[in-house]
Length: 371
DNA sequence: GTCCGGGAGT
DNA sequence: ACTCCCGGAC
Image (cartoon, rainbow, N blue to C red; front, side):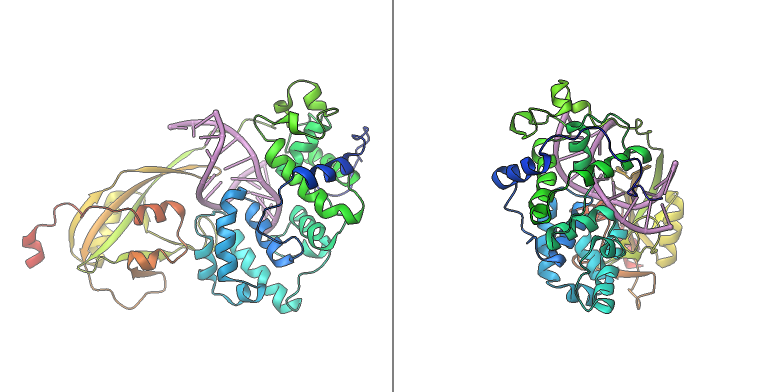
C-alpha cells in the first residue's frame, strides 16, 4: 500500500476554517511574483520538478534558461538528452533530468502534446509522484488533490501538533489523510496550494519561524506550546557518512590543451553526465595517461570534498599533460576544449574544477618537448 | 568546516 | 529502506 493510500483517517479536530484562512492569507501575503504561470501545465510541471530538490531562488535562473532553450514540451521532447543534461547541470539528481526528458516524450507521443488533466493520470508519468501530480492538477485544473511536500509536512505537524516521527510510514499516511481533510472547494485550490507552499517557505520556516506573521498563530498547537521549531520531530539523527576517496584525472593534451572527458553510465552516480576519469590511486591514473601518450608534466591539485546523500567523496585532482593527437571520438570519451566542455552536462565539482584558472603542470622539461 | 533539507524511483 | 546531489544556513 502506498504511503498516500487511505488508512486510519486523521480523527483529531482540525483547525477551524483552515483552508479559508490560508487562502485569504495567500491572496494578501503570499508570493505573487513567481515566473511560472499557474494555468500552464508545461511551465508548472517544469518548475515543480526543479522545486523538488532546489530552493526557489536557484530554480528561477534554471527555469528561465530551460524555458528559453525549450519553450514547449514539444521542444523539450525533441531535444537530445545531452542538451537536457547540460541545461540541468549543477542542479543534481540527474535521473530527474532524464525522467523529465522521458516524460516530455511520453506527453508528446502518447498524449498528443497535452498533459493529462487528473492527478492520478499525471502520477503515472515518470518523475511525477503523488505530491507533484496533485500540485499540477490543483494549479492547472482546480482538482481537489492534496500535496504533501516537506513544507506542507512542517506546516501540518506544527499547526496540528503532530509529534510522531517524520518521515515514517505511519506518520506520512496520517499527514496525507489530514492534508486531504483540509482541502477547500475547487475554485480555491490554486490559491490554497500556493498558500501552503508560501507559508512553509516564508513563515513556517524550518528555523526561526515568523509566527507573528502566521494566520494560524492564534491556534497553532506548536506555537501555543511555545516551541514551534520542535516540530516536525525527526525520525533519527542522520548517520555520519562514510568517506571515499578518488583520483580524478584531468588529462590535457599538448599542444592543444584539450581535456579528456568520458560519458558516465546511465545508472548510478552522475548518470549520463560527462566527467573526468576516476581511479583509486595516482599510479593507476598515470598508467592510463601513459597509454594515451608520453607524459610531459603532472601536478596534484588541491583536494576537495563533495557530499552525497549517503557518503562523502574526497576528490584528489591530478593534472597530467601528455603529448597526444586527438583521434576520432571514441564512444566513451572525447577530447574537448574547456569552452566545449562547459556546454555539456558536467557534475558540479567537475565544472568548478575545470573552469577555474589553473597554472601549467609542473616540470614539462623543454628537453622532453624537443625529443 | 559541518549540517540540513528535499520527492521520486527502486 | 535505500539511492540520488547541491547550495545555503549555521
